[in-house]
Length: 98
Image (cartoon, rainbow, N blue to C red; front, side, top):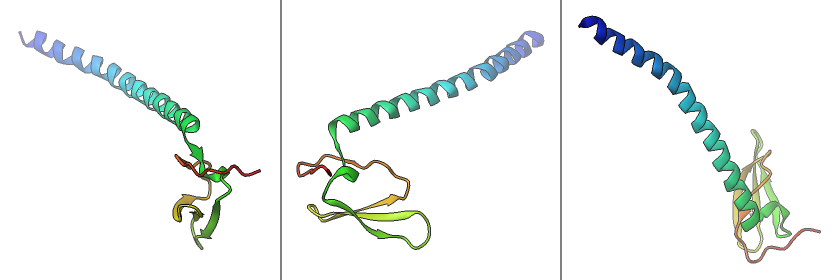
């Protein structure tokens, strides 16, 4: 009777040993897909502030990689990293840089 109980525990252990990495990999892939879809929707439905004529660099941090941008129309300050490439905002006063 004990051998049957231990065999079930051992079988459960090996099944979980296989299933847990598979579940983690599937969740990681789903996370990447959802973020990609979200980015594409933002790109279609919102404007990128970096491409706006009224959005300009206001201040740079003396140490680190932070910077601050100012929207002239909305009088809003946004804090970004130096390597940020996108800032999607729904804006009716968007004017494209040319």
